[in-house]
Length: 183
Image (cartoon, rainbow, N blue to C red):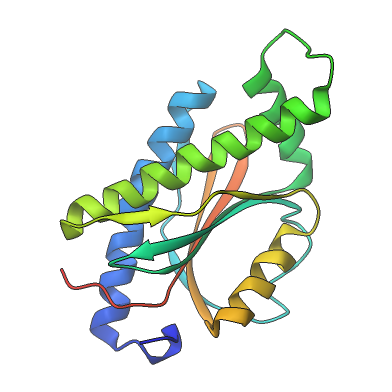
């Protein structure tokens, strides 16, 4: 199965349930790393088109996923929240090359969150799911993700938004599966 628009209702429900489980793991990972309580909203299935990319999500870390589930997963951040996250991740010591350090910290944050997300899903499926090397996108990450989806022929994804109580941290986890899970 190569296009998530062809998933049956049962397959979509299964993907939704798996993404919900992964989102819980992602929220826990974000909370632990950032020292802030991060909550996940309920996942929602989204039709992907040019209107989906609204330029709000300027920064992102994108991965290819392979195994029982294949496809793409991304952690997207508003550009303004990228600076807050960079400061939290780097702490009080300002590195000589702040931009390089921020990029490295964001890539690692994305790697940890995606790994926790897919580890929870893989555990439920009793299988392995592998992540590619992360691709960090510092501008127009939503468009970059959309372009990668278009290349894969995927037209739907399941997304979950995360935030802290103060609204200082905001992120979006997007998962576009191309193969059907069997629970």
